Image (cartoon, rainbow over all chains, first blue to last red; front, side):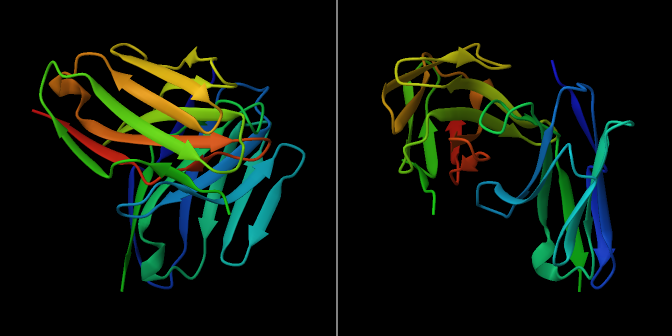
Length: 112
Length: 110
């Protein structure tokens, strides 16, 4: 089965700096890679996703890059703000509606 | 907007009790999932269901069962609760779109 590894487990940045979270996956058949943000007391919320036919996707201050050859994908947050503080999860799957394989999460703290 | 509702935010039960966690979604999604979330371990899949009355084991099904009698409702059952089942439980649903999560039930087994 698929195995997703996520690093780092914790990350602290100064407000305004960039943050990068990296994930690797093992199954070359995986073709959909979502990122979720979980705020305190809430369930995970989808913030951005990428499919295997695309190398990069951007939505305002967040972007995701995918390297299929190396089997890794990354989340980039620019100009971080205190409200970006949360736990972020990456995931991989072969089918959008089916089982997702999640990374172990990154706790991001943005220091004002 | 998709809404996934978990019946309880916090629950305290005793060892040996039979515990029911309920989840309801309002978007007519075929697929529903139960995860548990523990620090450092991420989200681990317990059971999932692709249709009414269908269920599939996830990665950690031991000690749990599920019920899906109606499309919108997916129940997680702890047959005989144990302290190592103290955790945050998350329900999710999906159709052809990515999974949408509820806000979780924090379950404590004393």
